[in-house]
Length: 236
Image (cartoon, rainbow, N blue to C red; front, side, top):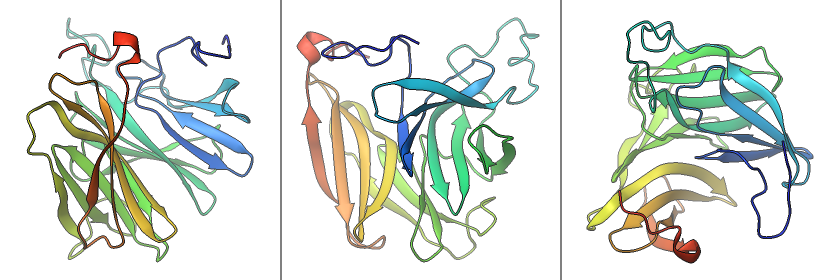
């Protein structure tokens, strides 16, 4: 994998929808791999510049006709999207949906090299992001235009009965792409939600909202925008 510095890309390859964490002195990055098998590639770095492939979360996802290429159609452009990568109490977690199966997958492993254990979360959580809170409760943020936060049960297999479920944000603007691609964090007691946001006739932007309570109002807006010398103005 070629590495470069300066104004050029760090990695000459297609790694969209990134989620990055740091565990001790090591950074880990997961990316959308769509229809490719093996899938759920995880990269590793010690300086955020030089990256190597650490593992793949799965060899095959599901044995559907499309994924097995036996239906004459395949699942090009579908499959897994926008995974959430987390590390909590000695275990790695990768959560994502597959747009061809309509399922939410949760893979776990004690070592990033695997083996990875496959589980399902009841429901479909578009471009989701996990949050392990300080009190042991676990939440998932997800959606497009309408962003929801849902508390999961202790086994992380379904929404918690009687747990938190609320719409945190709703995008009412005239946009190409409403808030999506959630990244959910808690930093120094404040909850943060980051999204991609694409107003019409404007470059794609980064939006950020924050609240001091999961029950409170999330306030914020677009915080970062660049047309990248015209390369960020393509219409959908």
